[in-house]
Length: 443
Image (tube, rainbow, N blue to C red; front, side):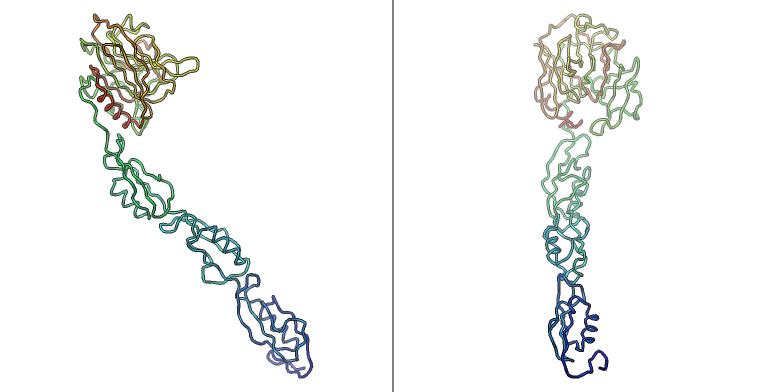
């Protein structure tokens, strides 16, 4: 026998065809020539099992006799066809990959302004292509569009940011706010940080500012009117309307706290006392309405606010010794529920506790106490009172205790108080409540 360039040079006889399936094309050709045969026609085909360049099939098959020098035709693997997963769901893409004899790779996720959540943005290797059977296909799966943070942005700016993110501007509504400027965004749905379906809507709530306050108050103390730094002592607190009464600390001063509620400051009491004495206000009718925003702490009896006829008095019996009294107390029962009290020893239950808008109204039939929390009114009590008409002067406003000797000291946060020397109408009461709840984030 003589060997040429891959050709069998002998003549006559027959040989057994070797088995070359699974071999590389080069190794298969060597085996065929070594057997006294020649490589015939080679064609390419895809395979989900045979490696690239491997022999998928041969003709004639292995083991048959063939004339020396005859040809063996081969089908050579291109590898498996990589499926097109882009644009479909990751679940469908995974099924296609496995069916193609491939393995779902680790992949990754990414935001997209166009591709739906859980759909495939891209893949590696790409389609159309071939890959080694059993190799990985990595998919990049969409998280959806990134919802932009537009809270406190102007409405037009927010709209532009939403569109740029591949989303659309949904329904706009309006709401009161004491923190967000008029025309700016109070809230958004969906919120930030978040993802959303590309092309879906982002609804906005736009600030229309605070509702108006009923004019004509005799005194109006606001924590946000104080120009102090965090933890500064509040030694003086002047009413911003009415008679401009100035509260001054006579013992330990309460503390100014920034960002305490709804981004606004408050005045924190911890056994402190501050009062405006000798205000000299004569109340011929003895009628009044008081609005207070503060916390009702669950602890021993506490006086939050009082308007009394003697700035030096702080004896326990307000009704007997002090005559005209507007008192916000908190008290506790055996299960430590906070209470609100007014004029004397009558308890008015506020079992939920926490921040609320409290209203005390005194008219010709007695004293009414109401509480607003989470946009819900709870009428807490109405108690008939005898009007001590011979004691008509309210000579002292005070915060934080019953009197200078710190009887019943208050522990809690005070934010705002409005004092009217009249009984407000239901509409006016509701207007002030709307203002206070919007400002302090109670809606």
